[in-house]
Image (cartoon, rainbow, N blue to C red):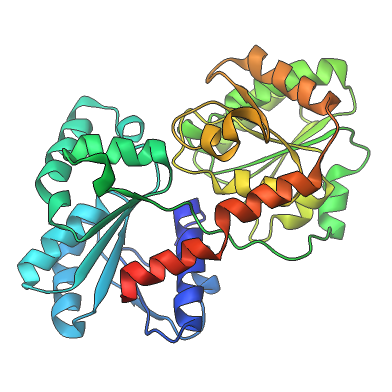
Amino acid sequence: MAGGGAERVQLEIMRHLVAAGHEVHLVLAFSGGVLLPLVPPGVRVVELQSSRLAASVAGLVRYLKAECPWSLQAIMWPCTVIAIAARALARSRTKLVLSDHTFLSDHYSGARKHMALRASMSLLYPRAEHRVAVSRGAAADVAKLAGLPTEAVEVIYNPVGLPETIETTAGACESWAGASPRIISAGSFKAEKNHQLLIRAFAIVAEQHPQARLIILGEGSLRGELEALRDALDLRDKVVLPGFQLDPWPFYAEADLFVLSSDYEGMSLVLVEALHAGLRVVSTDCEAGPAELLEGGRYGRLAPVGDQRALAHAMLDELDAPPNAVRQRARAREISGPANLQRYEELLAG
């Protein structure tokens, strides 16, 4: 239960299922995680305590034999193929719903991993009752990898918990003190999020807006590299990395612009959050979700992947555009509404 988007989606699904009266178990290959305290009351947490992911097969077999669940949602390859293998070994009749949350072909681009990805998916994905992806682009990728027709992979946009009101706090205000414009991003500090690109683009923006400040919410193995780049560009006072935030909304409440700089996505939760906060939005036009969520640029500007100058110019242009918070919030509700949760309930409990 790390702080990623897929884990946060599962929190929303679990809350909905518990509220609807279903018995819910959360089965984890590894123990702990920053989001574990947010698991809804009434959910039984089963920690397999595996030494590595592949070793979780045996524990999942034992779980399926002992509990005989009606259905099992397996989240993200290779957990998906592990679940299929475990069900076969357990001789279980549990219904399987496979969910993939990213553009797998890009995420596993190395030759050996890509071969394992394609081979396992083509062999095992047809055996599941349902396959779900979080955007049309991600669904097409899953279908191609698994050798399935496109219609065999259902698209369900990620449900996102959106608060009725968004308020700031003292900590968020301190981070923004004296800044204008206020630019925000959020995401794990890992290669595909390409926060280096964002920092370099922000350096260009800061030349025209000396009082600008960039806050990037998140944590990860690349923190040291991001801090080193920030300092090398003489942006120590302008780029703030406050770490992972269980409650990001106070930071959104004070921001003027949200920027996503990813090389690829499945369906970006943080884009939906930014829309709900009424923010102007800029995103790289990466596979597979941003162009879908922003309707090709209607709800935010798109810039080519990996182009720091194009991203900077998109940020500057969007800062000059008038905000339209009502339109942005309506789009967020359209994407992440209760129909998504209802569909997951139909797949898992129907």
